[in-house]
Length: 124
Image 1 (tube, rainbow, N blue to C red):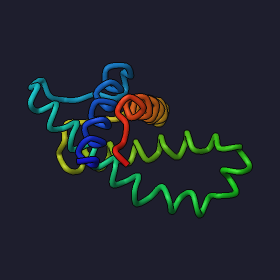
Image 2: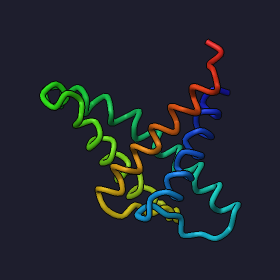
Image 3: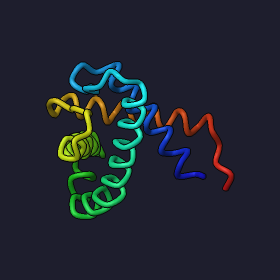
Image 4: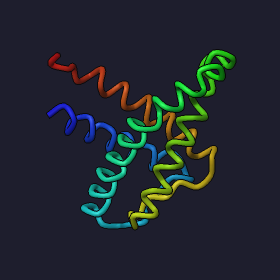
């Protein structure tokens, strides 16, 4: 149940990012298509973060220390851009245009996910 809740939270955060940033958008007008796309992209984003983020943090540990963690914004943006590329390769109507849009989108998704997860407590 926790995975489904986190998937829904990330889908809502992605939807808000598409509303706020002009470089991130959905190419479908159907509400059902938008919901399905957002859930699929949230799943892709979760898998990309689960697989690549620990590797990048381990390999780039010195950059994280040297930049006092600010490189995490760029890394998150690049992972968001990768998510958009994978979604495009899978034929999903989710587009991310440019690194700046990706960095802002990742920042918005991260902040909104964090805020929603604060409002919904874990049962652990």
